[in-house]
Length: 108
Length: 117
Picture 1: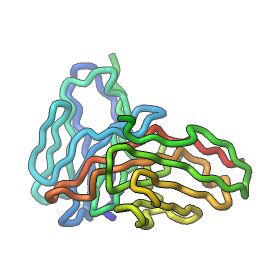
Picture 2: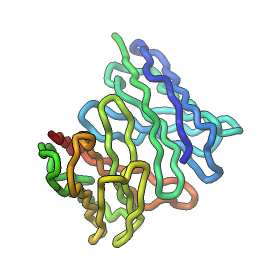
Picture 3: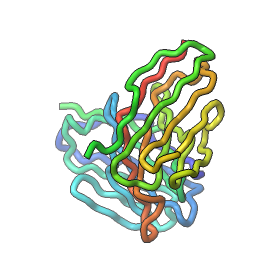
């Protein structure tokens, strides 16, 4: 299973764009990259997933370079409610590897 | 549609006691997973199942057993609880492992807090 590495914590202010990078040097050919968000006392919630290049949905963008050894989650114009732990997940068939997560704190 | 539910929400055990955690999903998902999350850490996969009647080991399977007798249920058992098993346990399910090459989203339950004294 590919191991992921993320910054332990990040601080931001309301209205800013936040970029969280995840390193996954040993990613396998069939592995996809998924990001989850977790609030205290809740289970993780899916944000976005991608395989290569760029993926965008209504809440975030995911940038994956050609070598796929890293990925960057981009949250546009964060608000206080975006304060949470963000996990980068590299998934192979039937198995999942969560990183230690990045605690994002959004300040007013 | 309740999604993924977990029973119980909280439990205190004494060392050596046994218990079973129940996970149920009403989305007709094929895949189900059990994770544990220790304070300040990410989730670690204990066991998973790719379909009714099948189970497989994850990252940290020791001290746990699982069963998937029905498609909608995934049970996690602790035969002899140890203080090191104090954690929050999350169950998740997904429609399948892959769908046209794209990995399926996992849906998580609210968690079970277990304290082993």
